Length: 132
Length: 146
Image (cartoon, rainbow over all chains, first blue to last red; front, side):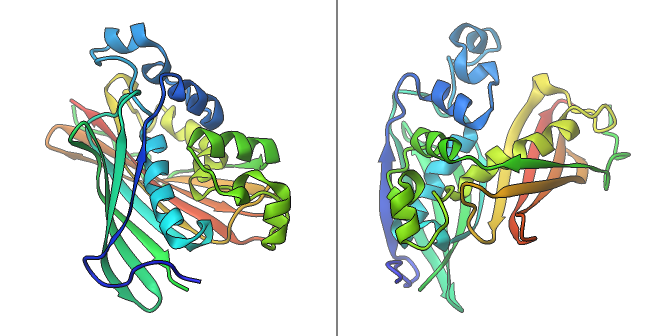
């Protein structure tokens, strides 16, 4: 049963999550991406970053989760495309906002972004949700 | 130095990933999933699935091994020190559940240069043991200063 709003301009519920200090370590283990820029504070600073940064694909998973929670389950998410911009950091709230663009033939197209500290870290993202 | 497009169209040997129940749980918890479908076998079975259901973005776990040979292929020629993940696109088919075996093929879709940046685009196609396409991924990596 669809819980997805269909009207263009309608907003899906916002998703908010604050990655804790050790989230990037758990996600590295869960995903297999052990790039040291995500888990080693000293290494990250040596390569010019402010410190360890979030995995872009973790943030994309939050964008996906905002859709599946709004749509009532993982089956509804048929496609998701994102652009990564800037960088996310641990211990600051990430907010995913989603707005219906159109609905046609049982597919709801949603424009969505993820922001942290007032900056979009995922932008121009588009999700396709199966209604019903 | 211009990018080399010699590897465009190249494909790599498929990889096979056996999806485990605890790996799905570990991944689901790491991305903040709370839905019982991803965590609780009985809830998943009650909903008609054979076992716990992988969140859609679990595709990064079962397709990662297929991507690695292309990222490290000298013919592709990515400079890792200057690489960022620019964009990502996934299109999903039937849901993946614990016990599935997922085969992923990877190919180089395009290599291009624009404004001093190299754009390396890979395509992954993942199928389950029944032959259903469960995920098609388009991976865009950007290398600065090519």
